Length: 403
Length: 156
Image 1 (tube, one colour):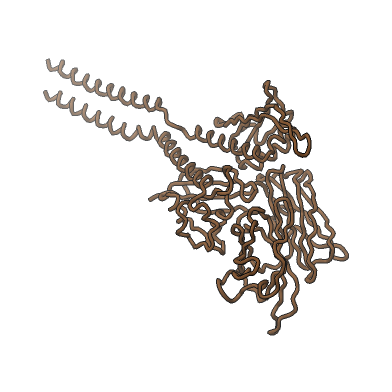
Image 2: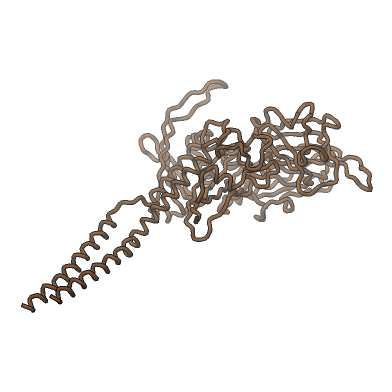
């Protein structure tokens, strides 16, 4: 009788041990599958979010083109970057994308607000826009305002010499990439545009040229359009021009804003040109004389310099048809006077060249949002998209955030 | 009598242990047989979408027919390289209607080892029906000459 009791006790203990062991061991055995399901769930969320971002126009459909646009504008009810003007997939509206640029002087939409609009509470995301290839100096250092691949040479200082290297993102050179250069320059009194001058990269991916100018310039900019297989194009600008203003474009509207360094110059706009996709030049504006050409540095909105709201031909900076022309570059011919010893010195000419979406498109990687914390699982999706007629790669990284 | 009872008790313990092992083994076996969606399968789907998106974009711009019918294989390789992310390797083959391979040079990017070793290779089939021949300034003639493009993608 006593032995039977012991037997049952031992049996109960053994069953208990086996049960506890099973509870501990089995989930561990299926952990790989659980992780796979978890990652799949994350991938599904990422796919839905990515589709919402790239295929949806958002609400209102033109939310990026609203003027004025407020910080985290409450009028934006749904988030999406697709262009409402285009019926094909994966064409993004540059006005909407530039509302993600956190240095946009015309305001932008915050990461936390976008997360809220996308219903991504508990998740984090990062968005990157990657150019399809790289353009650098011949020595493979990046092109910056202080590291230009061009210089002026010749006995009369009227020959422009430049050399750039075109590479795939993995660093291998791209031979036979087509380049078209337009040079905008001034000597302080005269203003001229030379080009387009076409050229090709050699087997090492290097493109170099010497271009004779009409006169020796004091201020100049090279606008170089590099195309690979007619598919992807990058616009690279370099030269010697002072940074007087920032050029912003929203829809058909051009708004000039002041950069961080205030200048002590009085500036008039004498002419404005736009260069389109086919390198066609369009004279957008010819000087109307004071007061309409003068930058507003005192009254009204502190950052808006030109044109004034009461401008006779372009009130509020509207240039009808500008966005459908799809300009890749805007050229401003400016007349500047410098105040020296309490006196305005006679005006001289300067040029200002910038892309309409200068903070966004170009040869640098654009990044928005956060980055996953070490150890947390994340998924990454990529699509090729078209922004302002140019091909880019958009990459979304999504991860779960601990509550 | 006492001896017989002892043996019975030990047998119960052995029975319990055996039964427990059978249960654990059955559960483990069921777990092995369970079909769950694995990420690699979805990775291939993602690559397929990526590949189709790129081919469709090239076709829409009118570049894909030009590259294929004019046999600009170098340009086609460059176009795919700049349109696809850096870590995506590709291998493309172009066939005619009879299934004969058209491209005499490889349209390829990546490490050949990756294609043979990788378990996750996505394959996209894209069809081109023909191309227009310009007769004069206003008239074109459609030339029916189907081509099948097989694009294989994998991550490096």
